[in-house]
Length: 85
Ligand SMILES: [Zn+2]
Image (cartoon, rainbow, N blue to C red; front, side, top):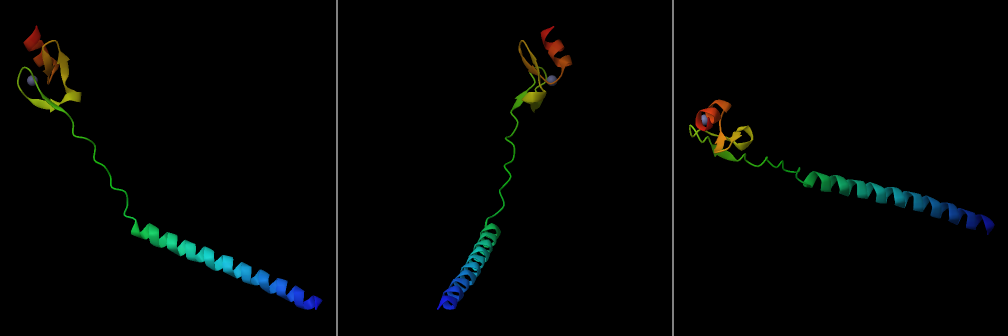
C-alpha cells in the first residue's frame, strides 16, 4: 500500500511537470503568433517647417533659417542691412 502511494505521488509529479511544460510552449507559440500579426510601428514624419518670405526679396525660406530684423525676417544679413540700414 505504501508503494502505491509513492507511485501515485511520482506519477502526479510527472503529470504536473509535463502539463506546465506544454502550457508554457502553448503560451510561447501564441505570443509568437501575436507578434507576427502586429504590424510594425509606423514612423511619424516630422512636422513641416514653417515657411516665411524675406521682407526684402520675397524668397520663401524655413523660419529657422531666417534672419530676424526690426521690420521682419530676411533670407540673409545682407538683405536685412539693405532694408533696415
Ligand atoms: Zn531676401
